[in-house]
Image (cartoon, rainbow, N blue to C red; front, side, top):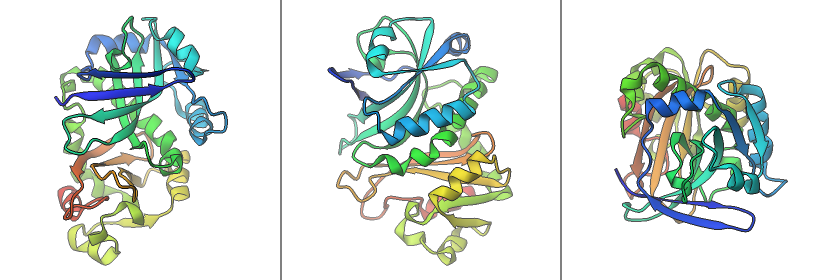
Length: 280
């Protein structure tokens, strides 16, 4: 497994850590289920992330009791093994040729460790490149909250799925996508499949080009007919490294496809024709 670098920026502390990412154990998930989860808010009181994560958690976090805390409180509390945390972490993959920093939405257990990356990781989902604005993912936070909980419950019920490549099993669901509507933002598609005509050449099922508000509404209303694309990429910034592509159910956060590619001259920042063929 590739080494990661995690950096969590606090009010008066910048802590960097180099570590192998922790592989979840079933015992950790059982422990998590008995904790209160402390949701760590950004230091900027006007952060869009703060507003949206509070709204998402209050509406859709049901797996454990929760409380909201600031980063200073997180630093004081993170050594407590009886607590869990929902926190936005900055991650680098040092094995990549071009090192980019990504925001991940992470659920971790408290532990008496020095580095944030040593905290037992229960679930981590990519949010965005750190250099990209919060508006690229804020509208999807409720959906990602649902996805994290679905994933944790799935591992609890099926501990045999626990392995290093922990999201790979969801790709077995990819052929089910055609049973619903696939909702995507136009800018989240690779430049070679930006038109519905090009999409249909590779995926002859229902695809709708929608807006961020459409996706937020589908998740808020738990629309049973919608699977949407969560894409993480550089969004026009210079750091063109990984492009994550996740297909998520608007109802409960079930994942149908989890993949990424390295961006180059042939593979752009978006869902590729190859991805459409894989889910066909």
